Amino acid sequence: MLTTVHPPFDTRIFHKESKSLSKAGHSVTIIAPSYPSGEESVDGVNIINVKKPSSKILHPITMLRVFVAGLQQDCDVYHCHEPGSLFVCVLLKLVKRNKLIYDAHEHYPSLISEDVIFPNISRKVIHKFVDASEKLLCRFTDSIITVNYSLETRFNDIKKTTILFNVPMLNIFTLSNTVKENRRIVYAGNVNKKRGLDRLLASMPQIKKGFPEVQLLIVGKILDTKEFETWVYSYIEDHALAHNFKITGWVPHEQVVEYIQRSDIGVILFQPTYYNNIIGLPNKLFEYMACGTPVIGSNFPEIRKVVEESNCGLLVDPTNIQEITDAIIWLLEHTDEAEQMGKNGRRAVEEIYNWENMEKRLFKMYEDLS
Image (cartoon, rainbow, N blue to C red; front, side, top):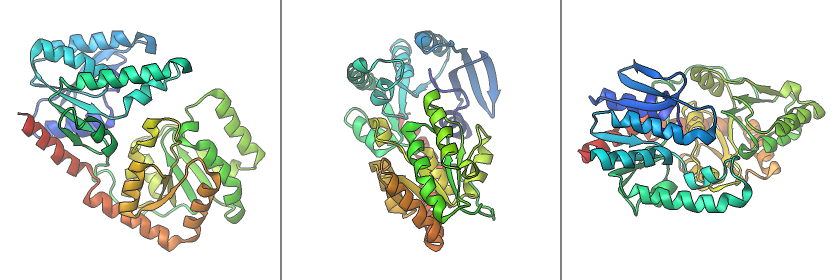
């Protein structure tokens, strides 16, 4: 497993794919940027940490270090996780003639071109360059993995593609008799303007009129500009929402699960700011469903398909504050319907959207490769 961006204990790379392959009898090594560097073995998986530079500008150094570490491995398959490690692994394959799997977690042309390090004037050119180069490099792969239907469509003409949804492990999301915190709306994960925090916050004054005790809980951090963070706390103060808003900062994953289980509604309000957001199918959707919590989500293709087929929540225009407000109020008022939506979501996770099912697809893909 090679990555030039993700940490060595990334949930998908380490806790899901690597542990599953190790359980199936494969010898698995992860090469990833970290600080400090060094080698270790955790839960049967070998981990090689290469030193990570302090600046994004020095990313080519990370790629070189991952290449050197990969060159030293005696393996049958290189399994990479983003365009940087895809480039590295194509070079490794040309040298060592190994099999190559590309695991595309995101729509990288839009994700990379939107990075703040690039000026606006250059973004169209960067988008086209990443799109063309990623597709070219994919022709050297033996198999491709994606996380949703939109990405599967993008790569299917190039190589056989397998979808492994970013879904929960059922042994972590066991249902308990947790008592709901009355009138709690939860957002699990880090938030910013692109994820709709300003719209969600703007809905709170009207919701508070009917439900004075309502609480908006952010289980994560605000990751945006200082100006936006200042606006958030000014808005809270100006609208007397101090008792209706809580942000936890980073918490261990098991506590995230508990927070979700204690909440009445889970929200996902990705904004249509760029294509990767529009086709995103975030982990938190499936985590809300696994916890039996009804969902309010952006009415985008991938989210819509899961929510409608599972009947686990409501869809809204994430730019429309009134739609968001109305959806939250409806679920708070219609508790029986909300509870049934939560049960529907949990059933869908138990039957379809769980890692145990994705694990079978992963094993089948490796069997086909051999």
